[in-house]
Each structure stands twice: as C-alpha cells, then as structure tokens.
Image 1 (cartoon, rainbow, N blue to C red):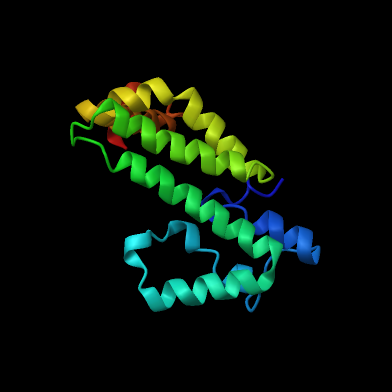
Image 2 (image 1 turned 30 degrees about the vertical axis):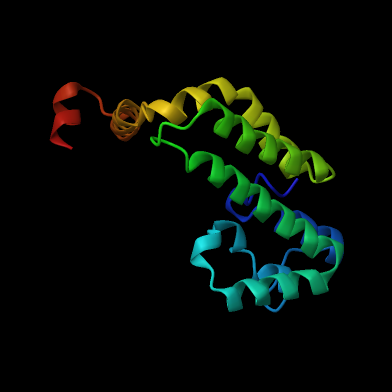
Length: 165
C-alpha cells in the first residue's frame, strides 16, 4: 500500500502505519532512520551502525524488519560490486544464492519478496552484465531526453513555433 508512494524509503511507511495507524513523524525511531536504506555499509561508521541497530532493535519486530531490508540491499550491492571485475561463474552464483537465501528467510516482508522476484526475472541479464559491464545506459539516456523534449513540445501548433521554444 505505502511502498508505491515512498519507493526510496523501503518498508518504513508500511511498518509505521501498522504500528501507529498513521504516517511517520519526526521523533518516531523508524522515521528518524528512514534514510537507512540509502546508506551503504561502508559509509557508516561503527558508532553510527551500532546506534542504528540499537534504535531499530528497540522498536521491536518492525525495526528488525527495516534492518532485514537494509541487509538484503547490501547483499544485492555485494553482487553488483562484481561488475567489470571478470568474476568466476561460481562467484556470481554464490552471491546470488546469498541474496536469495536472505530474502527467503525474510519472506514475510512483501518488499523483499518483490525485490527477489524482480532480480529473478532479470537474472540472465544481470549475469550477462557482471562479466562484461556493458549497459544500454547511453541509449536509454538519449531516449529519455528525446521523450522529455517531445512532452515539452506537445501543444505547439506547428514545427516553426516548436523550434522557437
């Protein structure tokens, strides 16, 4: 329900709604740590990580759910860190298995089930990208700019007026 409205915040809004019957507010521990999914493990100091884990564990079950989502994201980042390093097939399989196992152990979280299903749907493409490191980002970016400009130009009466803009 809430994940669609706050995709960058993970499962915090859904859990706050379940706990409190309302959206998160300043002062709610889960709201205060809502940016945790954006933080990379290597960017957190030991002290910050300890504080986060302590605060989220104090919340109880829902705080542990937020931590589980963060750990799943970190396992996926570990997999994607292999990009352009010419990894062995066994290395890719090992990290994929670790990610899927984590998601399976926490299958009661709908966000992790969706994430695992998406990774599974794109698994062959991910496995092809990791050794080669080749993406279609440049053509996708160009396509996005073309579509944006076409949307901006919508409504002009003729090509002359469109070029003037």
